[in-house]
Length: 143
View 1: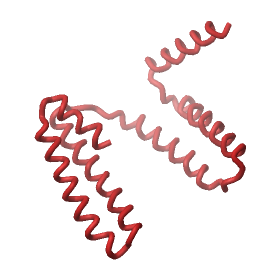
View 2: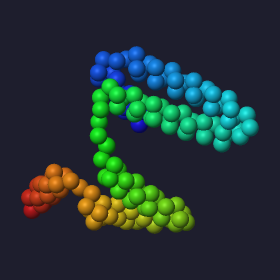
View 3: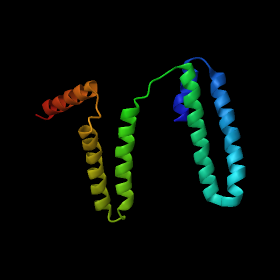
View 4: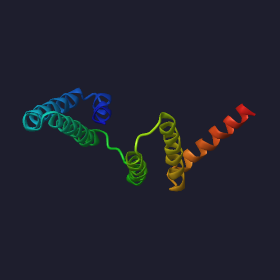
């Protein structure tokens, strides 16, 4: 996520902003590793890495917004988070079993993901039209 937003600096001809984000993220990473690895070992390293990625993402998002303002569709992002989180929680609650059952679970989860987003009116009118167009082309192709 941080890399995605940092590319906006390069697109706007501001490589110094990209470099500054990298240096600040590097300093945060070193500090997190020094603080968390000695007392917590491998888990400290994992948490420090996660914190580093969060710092990179937040810093890049905030700075890139100043360079190139963008609008997030928070309602749609929220719907994605709720559906993804709910299906992930169900997946984690199910015990691992045979490969066939895991593939079936994956297929059901994928269908549920699409179905829940459709039921929740996630697609915009343009996206709905695109889905209709693709489905009609596929029907013609297989007819």
